[in-house]
Length: 195
Image (cartoon, rainbow, N blue to C red; front, side, top):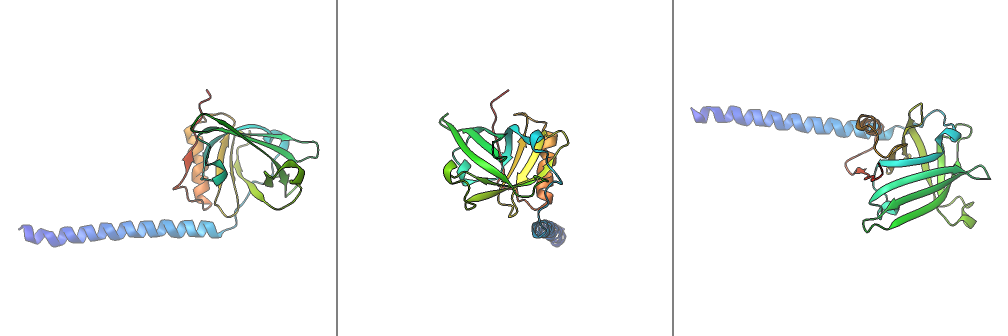
């Protein structure tokens, strides 16, 4: 009697394995399709509403942030030449604070949703080389949560006006990131110690 059940059990396991492989395959095809489509930015950003302090909630790994362990913030202010001053801060594992200052240049005025950011020394920031893409992919009407990325989908950040936003909102932004082709297997959830 046991011998008669073995082929059925083996067949059932084979069906489960095939079903799992199909689901994984469909997921990979969906991701590849999303990645093949051009990345869309939001229609328009009002820079005056976008300026100010943003707390990093999550990000994909980026080499220049390797030293950051917690309390990552970005502060944006308008400078005298009309560009955006970028002031990035974080705390390392040792407790040391880090500061990185740069400048963002709008690429699609008056829509303001595609920028290039340079962290070169101030005297040579006018050189277009070494500027990274900073595209605004999703933002709420009140400018409280934003998804920022770049067209190759290597880098991505979820930023919030508060250090501890509603997790449902964060999940919504992460799901959107996945839907437009971001692989979030290496996602870093940023620790914020501010209340």
